[in-house]
Amino acid sequence: MKKLLIVIAFITCGISATYAQRLAYVDSEYVIKHIPEYTAAQKQIDGLSTQWQAEVDAKYADIEKLYKAYQNDQSLLNEDMRRRREDEIVRKEKEAKEFQRQKFGFEGDLFKQRTNLIQPIQERVKKAIKDVAASQNIELVLDRASEATFLYANPNLDKSNDIITKLGLKPNPALAK
Image (cartoon, rainbow, N blue to C red):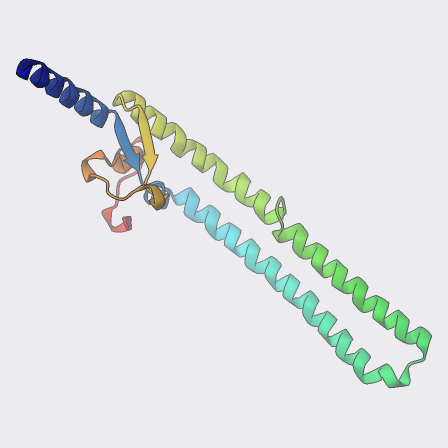
């Protein structure tokens, strides 16, 4: 019976050692910080966002001016003029909301720009992860950037620097969390 328990213990240890070697993780945020194209793309996206937000703010400021002018002139306007001014304010509000939705909404211009600029970079990182995993016989690679799944991670299993090297870049520990 003791021999059977010893054999089971050795098999269990062997299996867990084998699985430990087939598991690794990557900190995708750390990897992406090393890619100059990502930083440039992010700056471009931030610039567009700032520009479009300024346009939205200007549209709403114009609407506010129209509304204040309407309130000041309301007592002097006849019914037809009041209705026209109200309709103009409502129309401009709809235009501003549509512009905002077109730029910032789901499937809006900002989303499309982010997809066009960032997705190729993410694909490169994904390919590098697959290549490193294949070359090191790793069966499962987790992403440390999604911290909810990590309570503890052995630093020896971190393959982030391998991915950065695979991308042709030099790891910079100062960019780590």
